[in-house]
Amino acid sequence: MKGGRTSLVIVGMVLLLARHYLIKPVKLRWLIAIMIGSIFLFGVMRIARGATAFSVTRMVEEVRYAKKTGQTHWYDTFVETGSSVRTINMTIALVPDEYPYMYGSSYVSSTIHIIPYLQGVVGRVSPFWAVTAGDLIQLTFAGPEAAGLGFAIAGEGYINFGLVGVFFQMVFIGVFLRRIYVWFVSSLSPSKALVFFVSLGIFVTVVRNTTNILFAPFAHVIVLAWLLKIVFGENELPALDYQEGITDEYPVGELA
Image (spheres, rainbow, N blue to C red):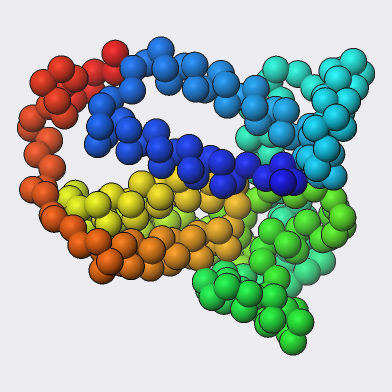
């Protein structure tokens, strides 16, 4: 309701990847159309986010005003995508000269976030253990009322342990994603497909965010997949064979 696009990206990625790999490959012309539509939609959401999202009339007025005053352009979505560089610059300027390293406290906060509402409860008792890396930069440079600045997963590694933290955090992300992929293709099943495709959407969005949106959603989708498996059951399929085409009509690598 406030212009957030993370959930939209995750759901969209899951549906698109599931359609492409499990049902029928998406043609190139449809991928281009989806990209163009997404650029337009995300641009409108960026302008209309905040309180205006509760009123369609105010949303339209805000978009028209932004266009009239030259505040929005077709390339704004691409510019905003690169705003992670800006937040990294902010982080380096702030830490450690003006603010000490977090030394892993943001990872503790992200882990606490796995249990619904626990992060808020801990925050009221001890705010230090409930503040994420993105929260620190947001509150310092923009204040509590401003729209989100975004962040960067590499920036979280730096804000915790400096350049060493950047290295180990990016290695962790890469190895983690690789292990999920190997686990998925070793023996196909509906529950594994759910976890795998949702995780791809999460990993796409975490590039501009922190582990706060990685740990909790991933843990929740595992629980959801396990419950669905218990309730409905499932049959495992043979592992993927990359020596054969996905389908007779669409061999591997052919887009359209």
